[in-house]
Image (cartoon, rainbow, N blue to C red):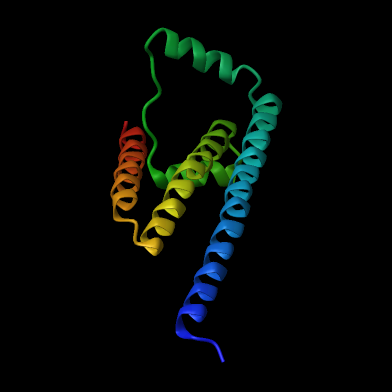
Amino acid sequence: MTTPDVQTAASKSNEDRILRFWTPILLRTILIVAMIVLVIGLILCATYEPGYLVKRYQEVQHSRLMGRIDLGRFWTDVRAGQPHTVIMLGLFILTLVPLARVAFCFLLFVKERDWIYVAFTAYVLAGLIVGVLIGSSG
């Protein structure tokens, strides 16, 4: 017969093992998906619009930036295979890697009830989310 302390320690160890096992798998999966989407976007760009990236770079140099596109048009362009929106989607997916890592650390610290690290991790997570929102708003 096991005592409650042994059962609690065993379940905590099992949960930690699962969290530590699945975190790298999830992060690698996000990274691989982002790389695949970026490579597809680059292939589409080289195939359909070979001069787009050079033209875009020159526009940025001369402070002639493209206007924003709304989310509905973005998904329509991705489904249509527009190279620059596919590349943009790959970059958006790539931003999920640090967000997911910090979110998993946050969950781990909450689970361990380490409130100092919860506060620091929440601060970093909030900064990342605000950065993504500010970056996407212009």
